[in-house]
Image 1 (tube, helix red, strand yellow):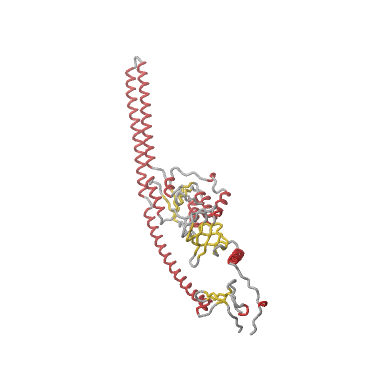
Image 2: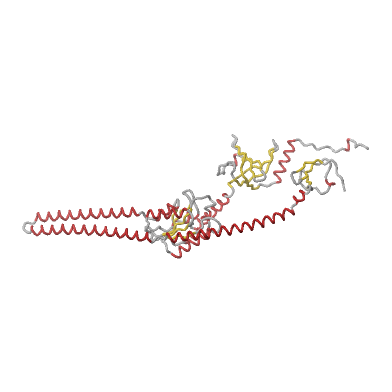
Amino acid sequence: MEQPSPATIPARDIYTVSRLNREAKLLLEGGFPPLWIEGEISNLSRPASGHVYFSLKDAQAQVRCAFFRQHQRLLRLTLKDGLHILARARVSLYEGRGDYQIIIEYLEEAGEGALRLAFDVLKQRLSQEGLFDIAHKKSLPRLPRRLGIITSPSGAVLHDILTTLRRRFPAIPVLVYPVPVQGAGAAEKIATAIKLAGDQRDCDALILARGGGSLEDLWVFNEEAVARAIHACPIPIVSGIGHETDFTIADMTADARAPTPTAAAEMLSPDQQEWLAQFERLETRLFTSMHGLLRGRNQHVDWLVARLVHPRHRIVLMQQSLKTLGQRLFLAQTTGLRHARAELLAAMALLLQHTPRSRLHALQQENEHLHARLVSGMKRGMELGHARLRERMQTLHALSPLATLERGYAIVQRADTSAIVTDATRIRTGERVQARLSRGRLECVVEKTRED
């Protein structure tokens, strides 16, 4: 067999490692535009340079990440292992080690960033429309005849508000508007309850309340429908949503904001002890004033008696009569105040006897029964959905190319472009290919091609 001459052998294009890594970096950076990626932080490292290095992973894979110091100016959270983030990044390769990585340019906690942006956009738009203006805020009643509470009937918030009202001024009746405070459709139901309370005008003021939670938990109070319902309500509304550090669109639209639901109840309920103390102070002032007035009149009478010479006996009689009238007047004033105080206490006791506690208990039991039916219905629906999902997964698996691989077939791809090879004549001897099997891949070098 004739051997080829050296002149006919093509020159080999031999790569150095540096050249290979440099061209691979250019290929990666040119092939991927800046992208958004979501995952969980692990293997976090903070060297003295100020840069941050970590791995971003999901259930099946992970990738190395570099977050350089100059890109950390807008960072608003503390990075730690296990934190779920959303990052804007670009794909690159570290030439020194040949490591594939992504360069982080901006990141935020997954889920909350979009909600925070929606919060700021709605807040700016409603502020421009004037929904937060102080001119639209209604004054709160000093002594409300009835209070309305818009909150969940099953939470601890309602119990805390009612306990506070009973402690401060139990004579004030309460009307509860039960609504869900979280989940789909809750915003529309809250807005409907506010409109209903405004149309009926059965209450002098409303409390819109919910316990604390995350931004997602409180998001129903950042809905535009709730804000517009609060703005349109003719009854003053006090918001007591979350904790003192939680601010919502509803807080900004309400006529007054309380740091907690309990504080909202205290804001709208007078303290009966202060009222009773005020009555006692008025009684003391009246007694002192009457005593001083009588003393001054007696002194004036004594002065007149000293000036008179003849009608002294008559003046003495008039003086005695004046003292008697003064004592009767004092007793009448004291008796009237005591009678009014007794009537107030009797009215307060009568109001306590007509508390709607039993009806609230019945409504609570009915709500628990409906909740149990809802949970049962949802469970049956989920079981049917799971069955349909398993059936479709089995059908999809039967049509999947992975099932073909499990029967012993393989998919051959070019090592450089990952293109699928279907024609042996398009592969050169010595070229590297990959063979994808049912489990794993084979890195192969073509020694010879054969045409069928």
